[in-house]
Amino acid sequence: MVIIMEILKLKPVFKDYIWGGTRLRDDFGFECDVEPIAEGWMLACHKDGKSIIDGGKYDSLTLEEVIEKNGKEKITGTNASAFPYFPVLIKLIDAKDNLSIQVHPDNAYAESVEHEFGKTEIWYVLDAAENAQLIYGFKEKISSQEFRKAIENNTLLDVLNVVQVKKGDLFFIEAGTVHAIGKGALIAEIQQNSNSTYRVYDYGRVGKDGKPRELHIDKAVDVSVTEPAKYEIKPFGTLQEIPGGTKLLLTECDLFTVHHYDVKTEIELKTDEKSFHHILVANGSGKINGTAFAKGDSFFVPANFGNYKISGNAEILVTNI
Image 1 (cartoon, rainbow, N blue to C red):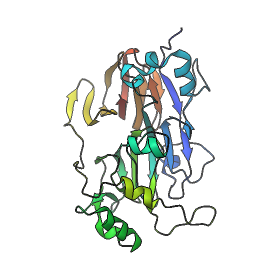
Image 2 (spheres, helix red, strand yellow):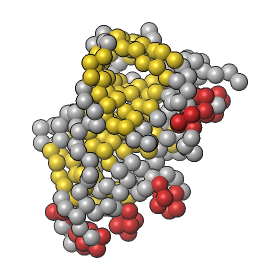
Image 3 (tube, helix red, strand yellow):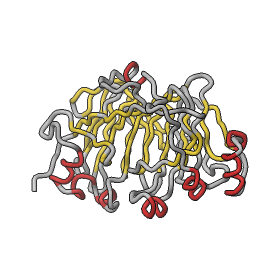
Image 4 (tube, one colour):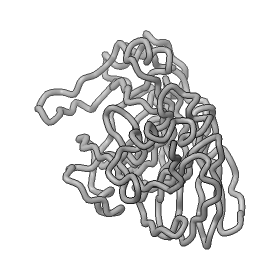
């Protein structure tokens, strides 16, 4: 078996949901036929979207095909291969308008009902308009019956926790947390590899077919934790000075770990047998092992790759398992 020992650049998969805008095209320079661009799936091995390799030995293959060709454990690592599915899905999200108020199921419910895994995720705010808001859990604990009544009486917004949002905020959204991204927010989302979403409220909007978009009230009531979110709105760690830049732990859990690096000159990272790294360039430009990158670029560094260097002036998010 031939094991890849090159860093793989990935092409995004774009989604044209009705609330999307133009920032992924205007700010990141993405070129695609999708309009509006609501989401760019930057790392995806899901039936609804798969990352494609851009250049190199595996040009035009999907990342999933490369993993299958070379061996799951060798390429994704022992931690990632312990999952029965590729563990993460990573997105850029441009909310020109409010997203629906929604909730995601946990693993047990999703496997039983949707035949895929649940969805815990984080949002890292890359940018936000002056008055941008997010919905994050409830103001206070209520019963499931009170939750259903608030939906039926159109008073749901009265019981939800609405927060002002700014660049650098970190939201840890466990499965079961009712939430919504508000207009004016630009988000990097790292999540379980799932597309199971239960829409609770959608501001009376209609889809491209002219009909109201589907709501999933019964399922949402089944899975929602109807109380305030238990996590603070901030990164898990504190800013650390490292050679060549700074490092900040955004989140660490049994599903994924995410760090933010501010590269000033050159930093050195390493993958071992435990996990791959995913590199998302949130801002700036530079080189990864001598290959030029720009804002919005996405790279998969295989497990067992060893040391690699990132140089330039850039803000990057690094995800591992």
